[in-house]
Image (cartoon, rainbow, N blue to C red; front, side, top):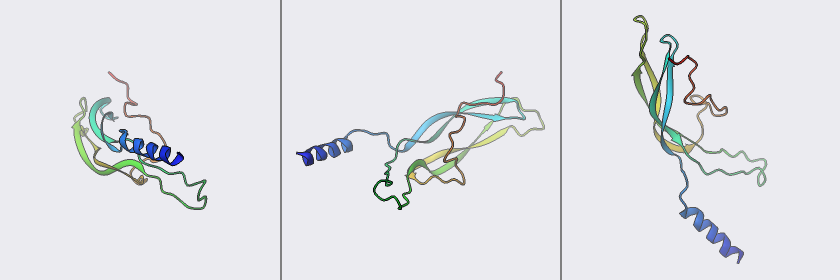
Length: 127
């Protein structure tokens, strides 16, 4: 009976829709201190869940690399920030995700450990 329950649980887990790692539409704030303003833009980024394991109880000496939802490929988009002085470059280039996967977080290009201020934070006063 226990095996039947286990098989049913696994079957239901595979059938139920789960949010997987995929491209998601987000709105982010861009700011340029020299222009004194923030603008919001729509972009794509990776979000969702990846399968993880906790091997600490089974194999305490084995290092397991956990997968996170991260980008496979990024592209860059450029927008013009309004209100810039003539001697300031008004263009701002920012990354957007083009493809996602469950994999290791690249700490060279991504903050993998600390939660940031959020995509709607602007340090400049809004007009």
